[in-house]
Length: 216
Image 1 (cartoon, rainbow, N blue to C red):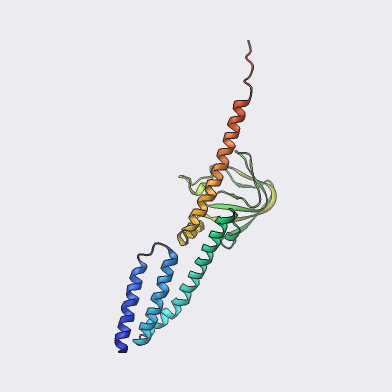
Image 2 (tube, rainbow, N blue to C red):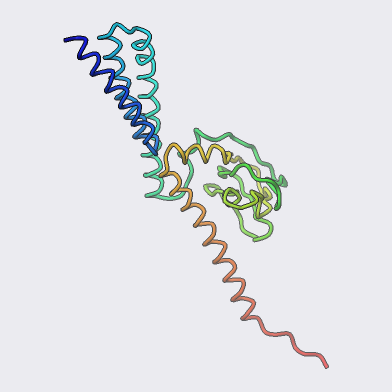
């Protein structure tokens, strides 16, 4: 009887491992992985297969920890998307960078590999004449640029602090939780609409300006 139960647990465990290859997102994959851990633990215990038993007794809490982290991140992303586009919840994934007045965060045309969340101080987009204030993000557009280069020069106007997150970290967050991708698209769209509004205002100003008087 025990042999048959052990075999059934083994087949179930193998089926669950097979199913993980069809998981397209990490949370369902972790859940199925945890189920396979339980099945392998039963298989190893009933069949006296101690290497299998020990392996999955170790993997089970690791899978549980990763699932908990992803669920927490999902909750944070959902909360952020429903309130505003601040990036406070991303702090654990960032590194801190001190900025001083006169520093150039990056220049137009530079190769881009990270974006920044301004915690304190003030920065300035040179070409557009826009200030980047605490709570705002800069450097995100280059992630989607075909050549991955900076589209603006950013100069630090006041001393402060910025959080830096690399594009590779952004990609990892997206792969772990596609919902983060929608949040990031909101961030990009906000900046693009801001730039469009600025250009429309400049165009309206140019049209309203009186034409220069002709000289004879």
